[in-house]
Length: 276
Image (cartoon, rainbow, N blue to C red):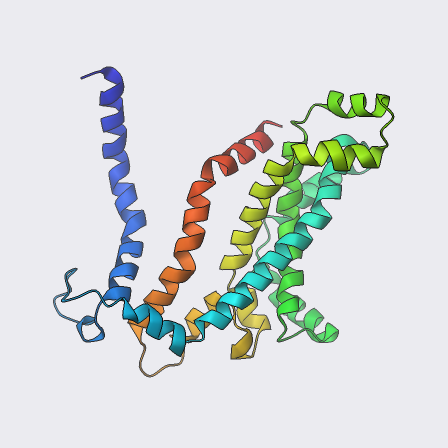
């Protein structure tokens, strides 16, 4: 047995307990989602059951307005991500390529905002949205999510922009290209991978947010997925746990797959930011 193989086996043995702890909630969630309703509360608890009830997913979709909540979450997450990127790209480019008074203070301000929990600002945000007439409107979530994600997107994009050589832009200027043309035709195409990764991270943050959505939205027709799933548990005399878990599976698995697929790019981006 080679030394490299021995190290791999040791690492996997050390990581196995952690993997079990991480995967255990997902296993419970999936087993509950496909278990027959009459076998949910058997004692003693067991992993086995009589049959896979895939129809639980279809029943959940019809009875819980999951489709409407899915559309709402997609609208809020995509819109807030687009706004955050549109506003963050110019700011990140300015921080990366230009010197101006207060640049260091602004960078520190962005970092400090990441340490503040949205819960601290819930009351103030609610009063602001009430003044604007946006309570019980998905647009309130779009604006709030975009605002809260902008500090992260600016910081991430600036770190990526710093890795693009200035010589490329200077060569374009020498060829007669304007600053705007250089930005749109040369610089931004090189930064597309960074913008895509940042957009997906921002999308995941917006997709999973719960507290602000619960505070701002009153109508069940406008619930996002986290609030819709929560509504199937809160204040109910009888909870259909197989429906709750089926909804949680459908809401969690796609995001988990995307996050896992792009994890190496996300780690690389954070490493670049740390080095810079």
